[in-house]
Image (cartoon, rainbow, N blue to C red; front, top):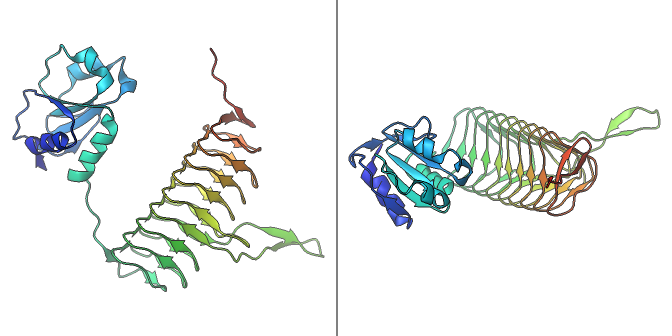
Length: 305
């Protein structure tokens, strides 16, 4: 817990505009909550998308402090509220900064006694219960690898990487060829999985090692729970892959691309940078930079005038 006065000082240091309210500056703040549910010992925020309902939400809020999008100030500036208002161009980002500074528990470096580690790892890492790290794995510094994670041999994990419980990194890919007897035979997988710095992997996500090349997630990629990334996939910096997505083998995804929930990307295609793949889409063709596609089969989304 932290005093409201300290929270306000934090926002002042961020050069935010403060509009005083009647909240007691000695109030102990326990965290944040959405504006409809926030109590007098919590902080909250309103972004620009709530323009139509901002006044109503503010009038009924019991929060100690509200971070308000600057664009909404003209709609509420004649009102007097009990809480403090913090005015910002990026209220959500500012709210996140405050919550992380005061209320997010810092994970201490620790290796659980049940973890099985057969490789040399970096410093200041957290390795959870029953996690298995096989031989010839490289793990950087300041990583959090939660419980029941499996990291197969020869994978490379960068710095500041988060891998949530149940994920499997570097398993053999689903690659088969028919032999002379017309029977399916597994294609050997000699490649690696490489997770660059600041990558995050969700629970129960599976990322297959490359066959003859590598599967690579570039710096800052974020992957949700229950995602499957097949062999030889390359994902560009700062792209997001959301829950229940399936990325087919040898597919390339560019930078800053959003892959929405329950999508399927065919193997061997290229998704450009700055793209949006809409929810539930089945993508069977390559997608150019900056394109939004949706549907089955996916096609460019064109807004009606």
